[in-house]
Length: 140
Image (cartoon, rainbow, N blue to C red; front, side, top):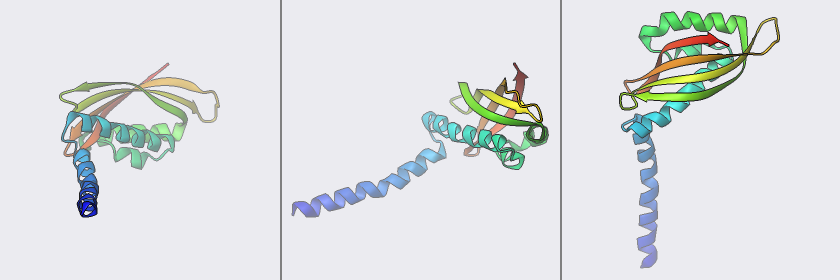
């Protein structure tokens, strides 16, 4: 009799896990949105590191596509990124906006001297996902 009670209880707990995970991925709470931004930042920076400006553009809001896509293309053709690191995130508007500071180490082709720059990326939560709306790069 005890086994009959334990098995359904255990199985019902397992069934809820996918639903809870799916709810978190919707970004219904501030904490969920904060956690989801990290994944988007990593995906965007990875695309930039590998020189895939088309994939990098997929992380950009439609209204910023023209401005930022040309910036990515110029960057990927002229330089190679060695490392990126998020140094700070400033949250705004209930974690629906974020300003992210990223430290980037890179070298320009064909000069193989590693330099460091800071980037400020502005992201917004829109229609269930994070999109970059602006990116400012400052050398030094």
